[in-house]
Amino acid sequence: YNWNKVYFGYCDGASFSGHLAETVSVPDHNTSLHYKGRFILDAVHDTVLLKEGMNNASEIIISGTSAGGLTTMLHADYLHAKYDAASIRSTPPRVSAVPDAGFFMDLPSIDGTYLYTPNYKNVFEMQGAKDSVNADCVAHYSLVGDEWKCFMAQYSLPFIKTELFIVNSLIDSWQG
Image (cartoon, rainbow, N blue to C red; front, side, top):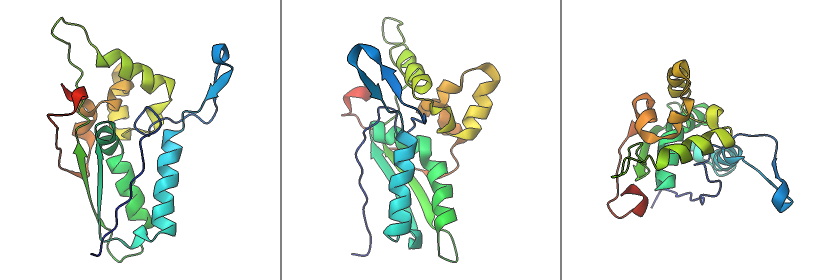
């Protein structure tokens, strides 16, 4: 009775982590692609914080399902800091993250082939996600040149400071 829900659909193919200011030309298709997921994430949250009054919230839950669950884990600390900075209350809001699925594991399939790893590494690099994912994770994995790992929940999880309650669905076909 006294709460609000904000929903925005997944649209960028990188869990709102794309961070390229310039467009990427696709000559064979005479078009350009925009990898601006982080800019979209900021615009939506800035709108609900400043124009819709979420900066007066006492409690905030960040959630998403499947790729949205991954989004929740990748950006929980960033959004938490954003909410704290924008709060007009005397105490910052309690922020919790509740990802529903999104734990796409970096493990080989039954035949020993890594299915997710090449795709996640490619998307991370192609969309310039290094500046959008958990900075502590990036600092850790940059020591060995594996920053792309911070685009996967299993590697970024140890660096998340925001209160986290993970739900991993048995019916998300991508989780199997």
